[in-house]
Image (cartoon, rainbow, N blue to C red; front, side, top):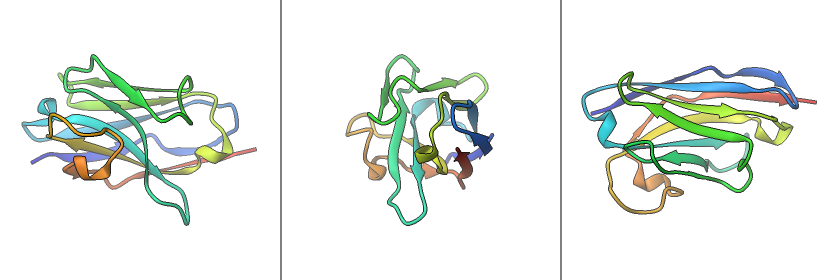
Length: 125
């Protein structure tokens, strides 16, 4: 099993940057793809970004392309989400997820086996 703990959330102003961390425990983290999802109040949990097991390929939701960067350091069992040029519509609880499947859409929550508790990101004008 893999346990995930997010950190780095907080309250910032529009245009600011923030980096989220996802610390993993367990022996299979490097065998999993990692995704970041977010959920705003009254909204569904939606895909933000994903990265392959090796970290060589990434994917992003259209809403964050060019602003967010996902990365991972398997030696440290940690994944990251660098968020730049933040907008008020980025306000949400951000969740880190890990999935052991080798195929299937990065966008689907069903393709991830493990989830963190979430960290709040609030962006104000």
